[in-house]
Length: 235
Image (cartoon, rainbow, N blue to C red; front, top):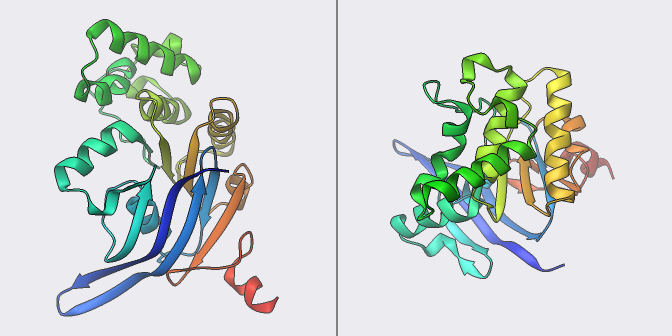
């Protein structure tokens, strides 16, 4: 399959006062178009850092990150911000909806950075909300929605720009079992039916089962695909 994201020998070091804290220690990884990748690992393993680098939220200390044959790790800050707005859809654990805006307005937010007309924005928002089965809740405010519905609004916001990549950081971490299952089913549908490339950080093995493949990180390194480092060490 054609490679969408190429991560080559990526390192990330954070500085705290006079100390350097290595988080990623030379990660190399290819993500093909249409992949649904789950990143797992213990707290502090570097999985969220890796997700943020792929999404252009952070920059690597060393190595390169290439998306659609463009090395985003070399972009200027303004170019990177524009690239994120066009190519990345974000799904967070805590939804990050704006409470004074209704579902329609929350989903429309990323489109305000585009040149779409008001009518075109409305069409995009309605389509996205219908995809997540919330077309009848578009004028409800977050306080009028369940946690599962809020997360579906957040997913609609993530897909409204038709992004190249969807990044999801613990998307079921604040949901009960039923709503978590519905959220994962929706992500799986976006991947299978709409061919969206999804990279998801999760600590939940049940969530990872919805992905096409799972990679484990430990101490800033990728270990054997589909197995935690402890298991890989015993193999």
